[in-house]
Length: 171
Image (cartoon, rainbow, N blue to C red; front, top):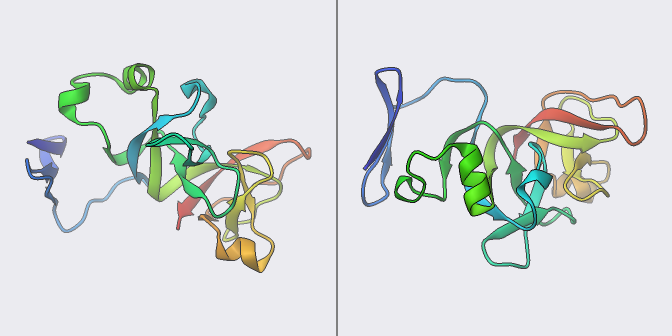
């Protein structure tokens, strides 16, 4: 039904019954596994790194508000992206899919950029910020327990309202 290639090398195959097969490993840049998700509101409001949760509308996400509700993070570099089939999207570009379906790629596993507020050090767990859709360093045991990622980069803001983008591994 569908196969992914890098040059002439087949990287993975998806059969008609949904079975995915691939070689024992695949080497590439840090990336993630994502799903196309419908978004609540305007797709332009969902920048890469926005942390999202399930909204009150079925099969739709919105910027996250509470630490125990994280669904994923908006990404621009999924190695594999499910949710919409080739039969649905044909040869549409990412931008065309976003506009046509009101959808964004939301990473659920992997290494992704995350929008953050406040100081973040390498290795710190990330939780939800007081600002919807943003993460921050987890400080309390509860925040660390409900962390959604581990920072792989640091961010030291120059002002209290500065928003950064750090590479993180989703948990």
